[in-house]
Length: 100
Image (cartoon, one colour):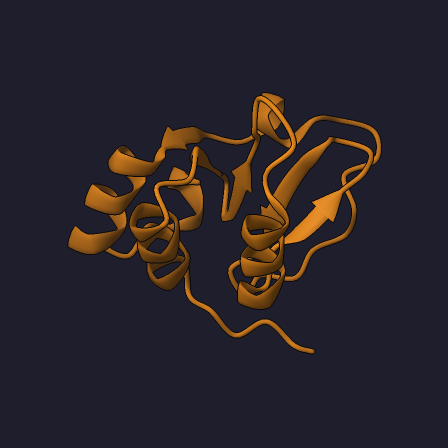
């Protein structure tokens, strides 16, 4: 199943669901302190999030396919924003590649 959600849609989903999300580059990552309920996990899967076993976090690519980041941690290389900060930025402008 191909993921067609824009970053604004993913941010809105995370906000409505009150998820501990952050934006790293063009992807949205969610890390829980403990294993979420089966209902929450299914909701994430249904919306297009995928579990990263290696990073132990949920990830959504927001329609931007990329190669796996095997040799680095994405949050060490790309700009990281909170859900609130990213919602404000993406709602007011379309970021350029230089800003992500």
